[in-house]
Amino acid sequence: ISLLANGGREKDAFEVNKMLYLAGAMSSESDIKKIVEYYQYYEMPFQAAVIFEREMNAGRISKNADNLVRLSELFRQAREYKRALPILEQAANASGRSKSWAQYGEALYNQGICNDAETALRKAMDMGYDRGKSWMLIANCRYEAGQKEERPSCDGTTPEQRLASPKVKKNELALEAFRKVPATARDYRSAQKWIDFVGNENKSYEF
Image (cartoon, rainbow, N blue to C red; front, side, top):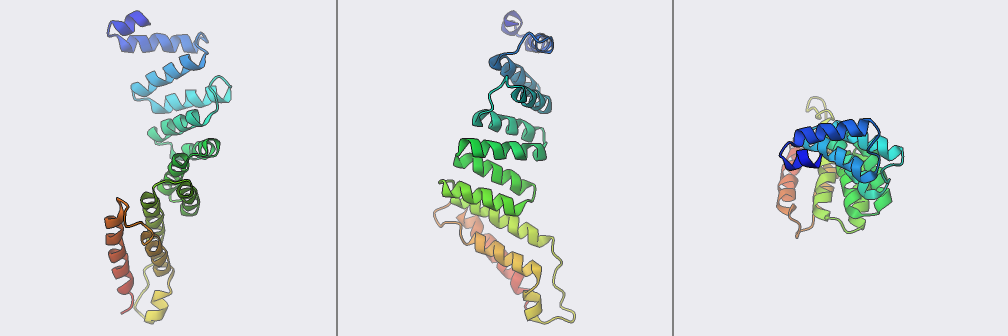
């Protein structure tokens, strides 16, 4: 394998590594991680994730925070977002790090699971994570949830009824979150633009 790799024949070195692994000749954590790296390098993140998860469940790869984060990243690279979620939750609980909770919260946000995303992101902020980025994600999730609601109709309704509609109420929750983005945050200007945009949208239902 070393001769092949040093001779520029990385693909052949990968094939030999793969055969040795499948034959059970590579079972140490470092060897298995090397195989996973090869699969990842050759743009096969799903296969890499399946091997990593199987070996972790078998106890040949340590089930620690760093390895859980790596496994979740492999599933995310493979666009297997739902499979990444429980692993990210385990990583966050195992590590107790703000970044792990933020990654879990962002993954939940990407799946549109707003309440759980907000809970995870609030935990991340409590541990010192970027408040600007966190509140922007929470605000956007709230706003996107409002977009799924029916627009209040002007026909046969009063301004008060329209402003009490689920869509407007969710917009107001989004505005509340956008306003919590600190003035010192990198996302502050973007938050102000969203405040103007969503505020004007709500005002349009008054008439």
